[in-house]
Image 1 (tube, helix red, strand yellow):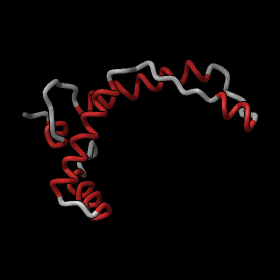
Image 2 (cartoon, helix red, strand yellow):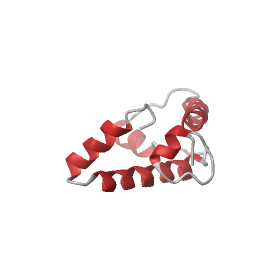
Image 3 (spheres, one colour):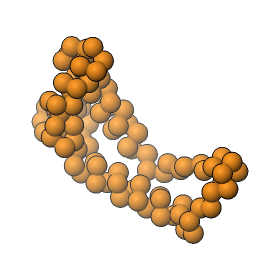
Amino acid sequence: MTEGRQDAALAWMAEVNGWSHTEAARCGDQAMKQWHTRSRHTDWQCDISWAIRTYNVVPIRDGETLARELNRKFVRQAQTRVGIRAGHVTHIEHLIGER
């Protein structure tokens, strides 16, 4: 939806799930609301201890720091692209920044 292909995305969601356009739009709205809520947090951490134990994965040097920096950059870019404004409730409003 953030790439301007929301109509195609909603049509595909409706077709695949057997939903009406309204149901697909409702799902899109909920996903955007959840994205905004989760994007307020920039301190996510990925626990790869299971992969280290199970598959002997060797983390890259300074990987945790790099991942944290890249995540913050990604969140800032996404927030700028989609817009962070209180009160948005539909995927269309998120995309065009209007209410």
